[in-house]
Length: 152
Image (cartoon, rainbow, N blue to C red; front, side, top):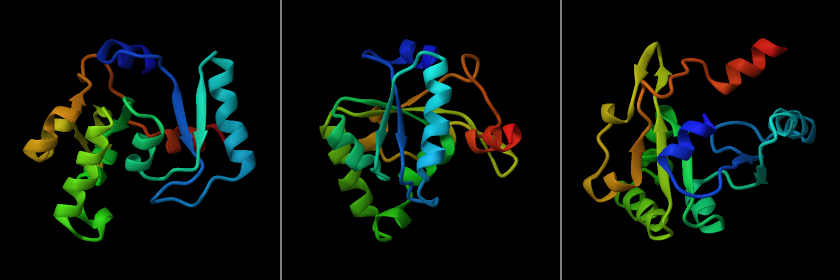
């Protein structure tokens, strides 16, 4: 995945692991250590943060290209996560855009249907900050959560 993303973006590739997620319980120290090990074994750089929201990550890491799945892209443009306000969603994501941050979006199986960036109605003023990862370059129908469950 990181090799494909390096083709889509300039800069130093690394992974960001958030100890806190907007939709999931916080990670325990043991979970963080286990997840970091998988990156260390592969010789990859991982950054651990406590920021559950991309607008905060964009402030911490300006100019970053965040690699996300289509499911996360769907949440990013959902006003529900901005107090139910479409205007707040636009203004928040424009703030990310002003930091120079972008989102590389990979296809994702969502409720039994494989979705890609083109399946979502990205507001015009935000379209240039969302970049599709071509399906022929990368496709994985299983989530990282499912992979971890299968490993026990």
